[in-house]
Length: 275
Image: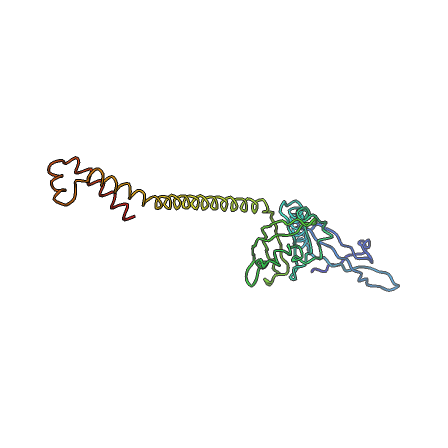
């Protein structure tokens, strides 16, 4: 601060304080005039002392803060992602228009509610995973949960929670970003159902094939005695002259074709008997 003496010609600033820009070279200054009149003989005021304080940098910081706030509010209001600001107790303190549209409620209805009250109670009652909030040194956390719209419709959302730290690094608030993933969830469920249906169809086809094979086997086994009887009758009728191994050897030497027929019949009989 610099104190400067002003003569009687600057009496326009008395006795009130004046705050405003006054140029000193290229810098902006704020001039604070205070009354410090020196009274001479006869009560005549002959001068005043004013205080000049350079506030160029502080005014620049103030403008930057205002511009930053305007940018934030613009992004906040125009964002297509539903966002909510929560206090450390998960109480909603602010919502953007996208969140109001997603949840089907006015901001005045949502502000003041605990964030947990937005969740689908069926998910909580069903033992769903806990709400994932940043903890310890974490600055962000993510989870997927269904929330309830104003009409009771469950909306599956991908939730991201980012902490807002103070100058000491302690989380004073959280920003919750909600993205509707209901269509994605329905697509996954439809895909899972289609896969399950295909697996059921495959198992049913395999079971039907197994049952058909079992039925054919049972029918075949039921026909084995009759088949064995037919083969035995064929051998007894066509090869009645074959009584011993000597007859077989003689048949093989004299009539190879007939011997091969006899051998095939014997193999069929053994196969049927084995089965």
